[in-house]
Amino acid sequence: MRPSPARLSPRKAYASSRMFGSRPDLRVAAGEARAGFRRWRGERPFWAGLFTLAAGLPIICLPYVHLTLAGIPLALSTTAGAGSLIIGILMVVLGLTLWFHQQARVFAGVAALLLALVSFPVANFGGLFLGLLSGLIGGSLACAWAPPTGSAEPRASATVPAGAGCPESADEGR
Image 1 (cartoon, rainbow, N blue to C red):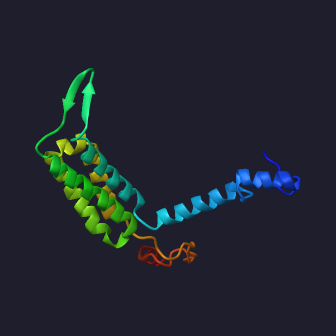
Image 2 (image 1 turned 60 degrees about the horizontal axis):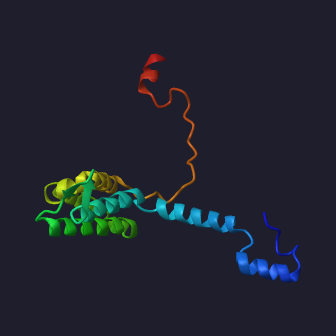
Image 3 (image 1 turned 180 degrees about the vertical axis):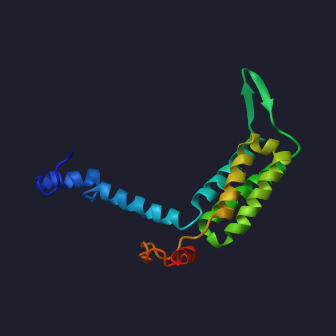
């Protein structure tokens, strides 16, 4: 732990502030940034966007990458290279749409589901099932996500006397 610049001589304090920056406590700033990211993440379908964005990457990459398995080349290039490029780019755009335009979450979710299903025959089994499964999960999460409610405080529950709300208990007393 380094001493604070107030305890150092002026020359060492200047060197310390130049070397480590003018922020005295970086952990406080990191905590504030993390809290801000957590707040941002809670206001949008973050995981749906992440899965949808991640679904586009294998769909884009796998048709253009030549893989080798124990010295045997695996060529996944097909005539549908342009189709997989378009599907992958659309999946990435839908993932970003889920993050930055939450009002279109149902449209983006349904479109991600349809594109994931179309990627199965068009884009090498949906990017070797990686893009297909991520797209289905992301689209489903997008369709199921609901915006957070306005009040975060817990509600005070009203106490109901015993037997006041049950018609069966009223008949038993007679």
